[in-house]
Image (tube, rainbow, N blue to C red):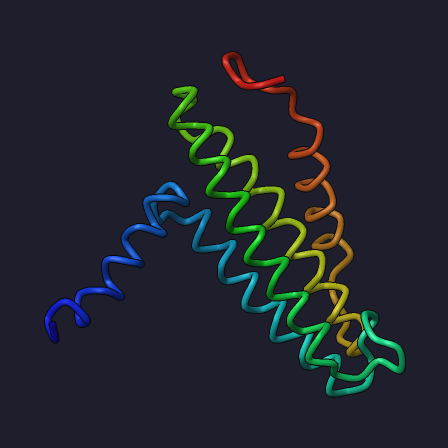
Length: 146
């Protein structure tokens, strides 16, 4: 029983990695930006500058909603990876979804940094906006759902 309990976390992680389509630079970047967004969001709340709460302070309910959105994002990546497996599109749906969500996380980090008074290069904001727009505007590849 002890050995089974030791193996359980590794098995669960392997299952999650399979469902999101494996570990690569894209998914690693998305998870990194998710963590940075959570961190900067908490920082803005503790500085009483959050755009998501009345008065700008920290609310556990708001934090929980943010975590729920991030978990839903991961579910969407799982859906995209499953579509790729079903349609044989070799990661196109997954990569488009990861690109979209990564750009959104980056924009949120920049917004949080601006609320904290941290200057940022306009080119970074423009690049993130272009990345999000490009992922939104891409027509489905041949064989993808319309």
